[in-house]
Image (cartoon, rainbow, N blue to C red; front, side, top):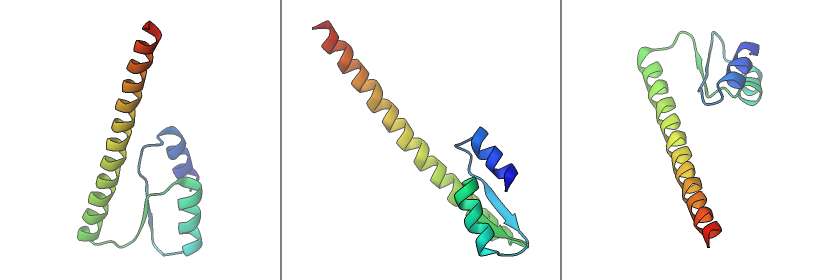
Length: 88
């Protein structure tokens, strides 16, 4: 979990997946809370499950990036309005 925490600190937008050989609920909760793990998958996983998980992660990331882009556009718009207000 320590390496996942480090990754999350250095790359906060990165979605991380915890792959484990056994499902331990306490480890899963700790991984989500402490390391910001997006999803946990048990070994052995099936290719179809893995593909579904990756698609879901990419969809989530796309949604976050779209929201971030909308917020950035809103901030730019407010900045333009403030500049116009300062000119008056």
